Amino acid sequence: MWRYRGQERPPFATDPRDQEESVWDYPRPPALEACDRRVTVHAGPALLAESSRVIRVLETASPPGIYLPPDAVQQSKLRLLPGNSYCEWKGRASYWALHADDTQQAVAWSYAQPTPPFAAIAGWFSFYPGRLRCRLNGAEVAPQEGGFYGGWITPEIVGPCKGGPGTSGW
Image 1 (cartoon, helix red, strand yellow):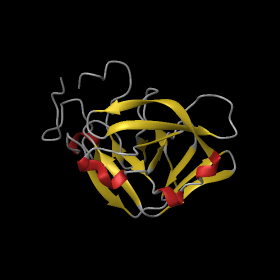
Image 2: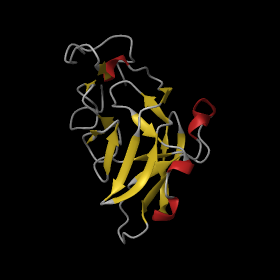
Image 3: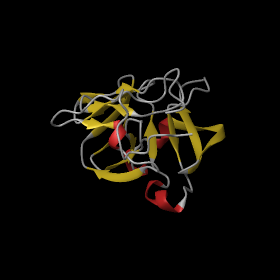
Image 4: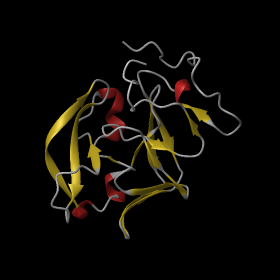
């Protein structure tokens, strides 16, 4: 179904300038990349997570997924939601809501037992930037379009990115 797998940019893709990254240059299947940029995640005024030791998951057509180690997350402020989903690359994902929030809205997800190529993110957390205030090296993160994906769009990321209407077949 996917025509583009990181070997070539489609004609509708934005060409990156210096210091920019095209989501169309990321591979499929995805790659893991260690990152030492400072990440902060806030739920309202409260700091929920902070680290300068994160992992980026880079996949064709998606802005990077950012994963923080469990010791960087105030897990007492989260509660595990019922249910899960399955990623063809990473395996079964669990979802987390804010402990103080009575809704079932997921603000984060994790993989307790990811597939072997993604073992490095076992137990690590990723957060939805459209539901929390996320920053990467001080830059405010914009959410990936659509309600399912949680990619982090920062000023150096160019697309277009999957997630919006009509993008499922790229």
